[in-house]
Length: 174
Image (cartoon, rainbow, N blue to C red; front, side, top):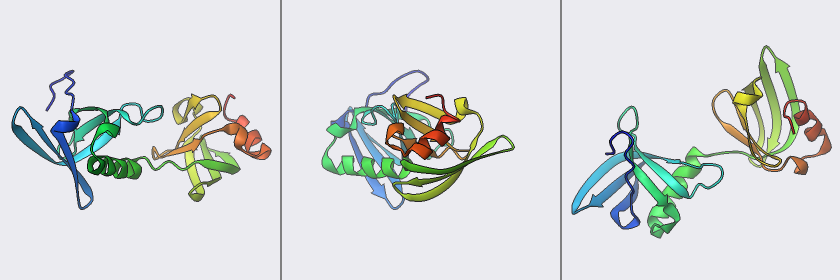
């Protein structure tokens, strides 16, 4: 386990992931010694711009989830390990893409959204603080973060219908 401010690099030939029921486990073999972490979580260091680069692996069996190490590029792992990582990230990073905004209602400092997404119709609530609740990822590309920290993505504002764009323009500085 890494000490404070120490970055441990996890090399493809030193690690193996395995799914055990609903959890992901990790075996690390370094300098002839194997350490098994029965429950790990994965957090991309750059979750929006490059999920493959610099994947933080954390020990989920400990309350504060200390970092075990960093995988520089997990796409270089063997197919079995890549599949385990892809499944874990898909579960953690379920981010529906908004295709239409039906309504945005403002009430008592909250924004109530009714939208259509690539995963079907959804409703969510955001704080009426655009600074805390939104991230502009690129030109016309936005992440909306609701009160439960779930994210909703608008990949391209210009791809939305004109009514959706007008509703959105009232709350985002585009």
